[in-house]
View 1 (tube, rainbow, N blue to C red):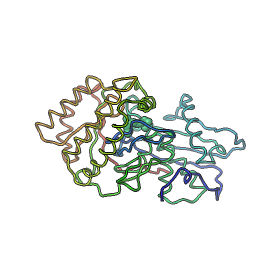
View 2: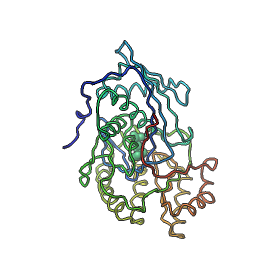
View 3: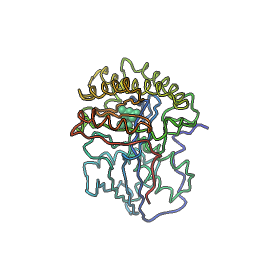
View 4: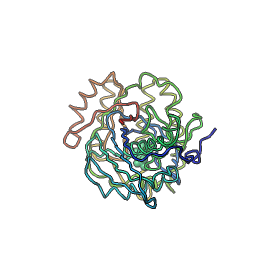
Amino acid sequence: MMITEKDFVSAPYNFSSENGITKWEAPSNIALVKYWGKRQNQIPANPSLSFTLSDCKTITQVSYSKKQNTEDFSFEFLFEGNPKPDFHPKMEKFFKGIESYLPFLKSYHFIIDSQNTFPHSSGIASSASAMAALALCLVDIERKMLEMTDEFFYQKASFLARIGSGSACRSIKGNPIVWGNHNEMASSSDLFGVEIDFDLHPNFKNYQDTILLVDVGQKQVSSTVGHDLMHNHPFAEQRFEQAHHNLSALFSVLKSGDFEQFISIVESEALTLHAMMMTSSLYFILMKPNTLEIINQIWQFRTTTKIPVCFTLDAGANVHVLYPESYKLQVVEFIKTKLSVFCENGRFIEDKTGSGAIMLF
Ligand code: PMV
């Protein structure tokens, strides 16, 4: 039966909890088929698929205590232990957005303390891991008051994370994760991320993702603005259709282990994402000259060595270098000697696919 938004509205609580603490870590994710464009309520315009990462993650602790006044949300937000009042409007908006699914929110005071394992100024978007970790903490509090299955727990966390930041719904479980209805996957949903429903070919297990930090500054254009620009975009319909098609093709590849096809889908998706940005009514370029230098170096290296290494891009200038674990030595050597010169202060982060969020307590 199809799961709808109504299924996430809580039944009356069975127990009451006075206070407590919960702590979760959630990883970042990197899309192979990109989500770019959405409808109302963070419903994606097309399905996407991502690898859940392992080491780039957000660790969030939420302490909660019951209060008398239930008129307003009440919370303190700390980042790495320090109060961050500038995060309050975002948090308030998130709480408003999820209130109808978590009716306990106004009855408690929350202290939310969050930290990332990746450096601040790395140009790595933390919204996916941050929203996923927070959503997990909040559903964990609800599960102390209401019985729920593990399956529903993770679905609801993904559903709420999506309301915070679309791609965050893919940061709950590993690996790969699909978000958005797709006709070849009965369990897929626009409302939350789901694990693929077939065995992943061993070629893609422990896949490596080295993130080259080309530009560590603030994004020039937020993804909210970018998604909006897909409304009335001249190529929107073809793009959404192409994403469905690329996802079907990627499903076959993830089953068969075909590196060549994998590379052509993943790189084309990355360049298409940026092509959409370059062709929207407000046009912009997030790649930097060094992004292109790196792409060219990867192409040359692949041609000469036949090592199946490829790139993908997020909504920024940084480059994710993707390759099988079996070629790690050669590729890391190549990155150190040939690619790191194109990174800000030579910086890059070695990550790989992981198995999803973890409860810390
Ligand atoms: O979750 P958002 O709204 O920050 O959008 C993320 C969009 C991309 O990272 C560019 C692509 C994706 O699917 O993650």
